Image (tube, rainbow, N blue to C red):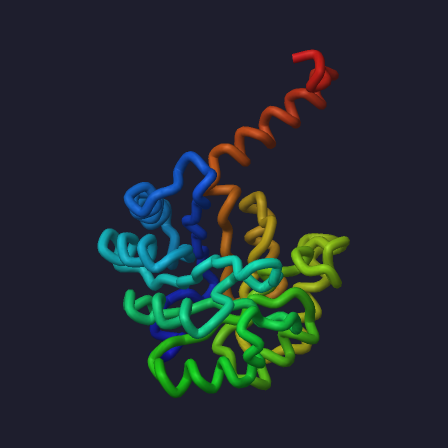
Length: 238
């Protein structure tokens, strides 16, 4: 499969995810969310778990970026951490699998280059997206032959926890676009249409937006917090 056949360049990808503790959790709901995203003009979907990916693919004909979030003890790598999760996603027929491509040790001890080698050997049709936290990891992902590099984990690793993807007019994203030839995907706390448009101006391949579209509890929290600030009310006074 070739990336340029999927129609994602310059387009919006909507992340349809809800974890077990969230009110919208469930494959049927995520399938409906994907339908709504398609009706709104999304060109692709990012989804968590093979069950959700399968349901979404049943409902919409958009390309899907599949992940499996799975915790292995205290290991910090949980986005498609091992070959097991890749196999689950490959069985759904999704076009792209995204995985943690940071420098951190994986729960099974497999090096990232070996994991990529095994994926390419077993699932040659899969496109691979590298979820990284900095430019160095993105450059490494390019060397390993990933098809896409995403800034998903900026601010979510110990090394980058004080950073924000959108800080200084997306300075990290600009550096990625400048230093890495592999198509760059903007993802992570992109909260407004204006921010998404700015990412395209910077030169990214496509933009993934999740919580600002598909997590109503987070959207509600932002409205409530802003209204409290505007009215001078404290949380104690409500």
